[in-house]
Image (cartoon, rainbow, N blue to C red; front, side):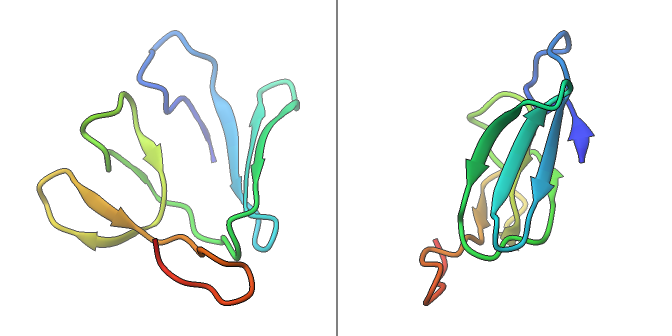
Length: 85
């Protein structure tokens, strides 16, 4: 997905990818890799306002939508055994 999730309307958009076993990847609009975090098997994108205490939108996979602005997220805690954080 491409967009500005920062909360700053003047910030440049970023390119975000859920790269399967490569985890989470983020590039600037010029193609420079800014982040590469191997979090286990990561394949679904979900962008929303999951953290009311942070500016902008967040890129995560919700597990339980409570409706009060605070959500749980699903991450693979261990690349071999999995797990939920």
